[in-house]
Length: 272
Ligand code: ATP
Image (cartoon, rainbow, N blue to C red; front, side, top):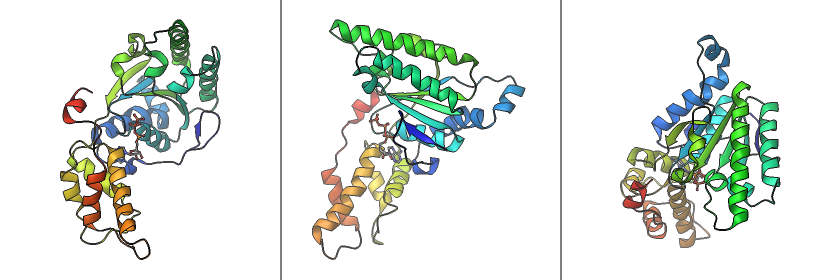
């Protein structure tokens, strides 16, 4: 599949196997993204209408962007990415033009996924100044009209990600727009073990490394933080012996746990 950010930089493809845990989210996405894009004929025969838009929400660093990339790779769709912050920070008119252009491109290269990261910053910004409120309103109107315009288009899916679903305008979650909303939680213990295995697969691990143990003591860690634990463990080995270090030991992972701390507590996470 071809993967593109905005107009240019290509992404590295990722697969479902690069994502630890999140079994039910992955399953729902396979059905909602992969099946309709890969088996459009079967959906037509059975008069099934796949979702037009899927919204992923959850704490930062929990794999929302990576899930979208995996869904695009698995379904052979071209991925077009737009960041809400980028659109919001553009000059008046430019953000809407980029939005329109991206939908046009999504139609041209279908099957495609148009990914709006930080969608809340396009349409949820509580701006104290007039220009901000006006810009938000204009971007929201453009987005809604583009999404409504997709009704007749086939093979195009809009995916959005946000850490603040409550900030989104209710119009966005009406049927035909983001009609499927999935919560992407931090990984559970099994998921953390998988994520640790994924992020340490290129690191030479000594036989004493017990990733299951590390998974038990990383309760509130996000996937991004677990990736940082693996990186920090390798750095700890390097710091110990920069000339000869060739393996990472369990003690290096324990050191890494002192350096990398979870940003969100259990009570913060419960609010998502
Ligand atoms: P944000 O809300 O800050 O944009 P996000 O939810 O989109 O974050 P990603 O950008 O997908 O998170 O993930 C950040 C990093 O963490 C990636 O390198 C990804 O591989 C890793 N990661 C997050 N969750 C997992 C997981 N469950 N398994 C493996 N890696 C993970």
